[in-house]
Length: 583
Image 1 (cartoon, rainbow, N blue to C red):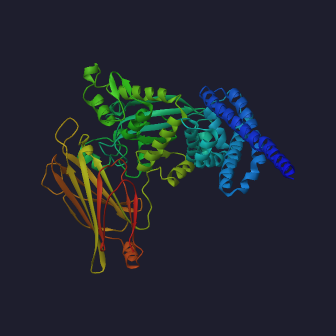
Image 2 (image 1 turned 60 degrees about the horizontal axis):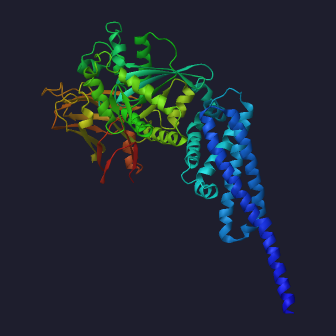
Image 3 (image 1 turned 135 degrees about the horizontal axis):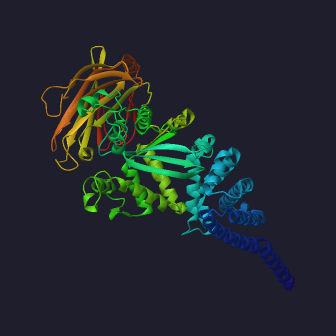
């Protein structure tokens, strides 16, 4: 009897072993070997993409597709383990990763089979963005892969691999570009060349849309590639136009800069970025006599370039070392102070900027997707802080920019609103040494609500090559219909005891008060506006539906806000637009 039981046990053990061998261990071994093949294929695919060798990419995609099919088949065999609670969640996650990988390979395969033999990675991206259904599948696949990176790392052993970072980059890039899919051919020059005006706004010399434009450029794109990049000192353009423009100059520029004509270097004088860019395009055409169409404007501050240098590495141009740390200061010294030591004339001193741009473009050509992912994050971050602002002459594309908060337009807000806009007028690069403290208060006097804005400028700089007394034409934008009661602290000129006048106008569905003030180094000055709030804001306060929207001027740094509104108090540093609800 015992021997019979022993024989039965042995048979059961043999059956379990046989089942484990053919239905557990072999499938697991197959999954493991196939994932190793996939990992190797993906590494090769990335190299082939860099070389624009899409014939090889297509072959490897097909191989990867076959590998995934084998994994899917083996996972079906292993699906019995889903009955185990602790295994079920992990199994479903792995199965989801595999299914999403299959979606991606099918999507890529479809695009590769539909495109021409002579294609580049830019063409592939544009093709995806243009084909909504394929794009949707690809986007979902990569989004899900990005969410399941921990599982993917466990399955494919991606530690110290670039693949996980690549998945994140592609997922983010697809989300970033998706809003433009209907216009992507047009934007990237597939239907003819596109010209974009580049404006380099130095926010250490603040102007309404972000900074003084000392350098400009024209970027020409055709068939997804950069056809030409022209960068030049803006004074080269302006100096050739002296005495020829005879155009109407903004009053503040005439009064405080004593400029008889309106030159392109001062084109960004409206706080509304789209309005200023329309002025910039018109002035560029007037001065350059270039009547070809400008399709859009890209405005950036030096901090963007510095952050990108942190990814691509140190650049040495004409013996000058440029790196992430102190980039703005090093660039200013190169073009303002030390150009003579490099045997460069004053006329050619900004040529180093073009050389730097070309060097950086060359460095960017064959970077890893990990580096591109970092750069994409930099762009996304600086779009939020308005260190990058975009404008398109195509109304549909412009609407997309506005919707994504990338357009720098004055917000049309149906509530209390405040925006403070400084225009550094002949103060060198003094903004980098300036602290701003804004106090905003509202008090009820009889049946009216009186708002007071106090702007304190604390100048921590000295008289030097890049700093002098701070001269600013300050505008505050408030709800339309507000009534100015008093201005204190304004000045007629920078060293005058005579009070300045306050300009008042309605624009952008706002009322704008503007005046001039100057602050000596190592001192502080306060400019105060007192005004009666518009009737609609009064009604909102009485109905307990009051909100305050504070819009940040692009390029401005070091702003502290102190609020005292109807017994509500708050103190914060403003880094972006902010809405405050008071009940």
